[in-house]
Amino acid sequence: MATNVVAAFESSLGTLDIPCISTTPDGFTEALAAQIELPAVGVPLDIDGISLEETDANLSPSSRQLVEAKTGITPAALGVAAHGSLLLQSSPNGTEPISLYPPRHVAVVREDDIVPDVRDALEWLDGEFTDGRRSAVFATGVSATGDMGALVEGVHGPADVCVIIVEDR
Image 1 (cartoon, rainbow, N blue to C red):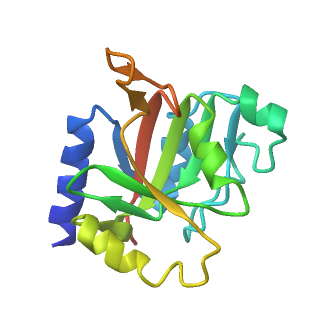
Image 2: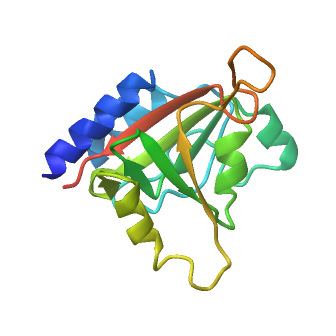
């Protein structure tokens, strides 16, 4: 079943014109390098076998460095296959601003963290926020608004999104 869920996630991302790359932990650094434009900022990914330490991403950016960054790299807690959505959690490391401010967002999600639909994501979230100190958002595609007429992308967040799926060992 996991293979079907991953294929559905990739298909949903394709519908949104979001590039999606699958890689092993061993191939992660190379896959990421092909997707980032420097300067890049990131937060620790907390995924076994991969790290941003070997990249040129700044993991403790100042406000100025965040504004100047071309790429933000963050983990996604979940991928939602039915919609190609990413569940992005807040963190003390700055996941929210790093996923929003740079024009390109590279989200990294573990293959095992892709769920079929929002109902499954909400069940997962049920136990995550009992202390009330964390938040999460579902992000689907690039930032866009149609408030003023024509659809405009990249207004309230990244204009470009890429997803890297890290295959399980």
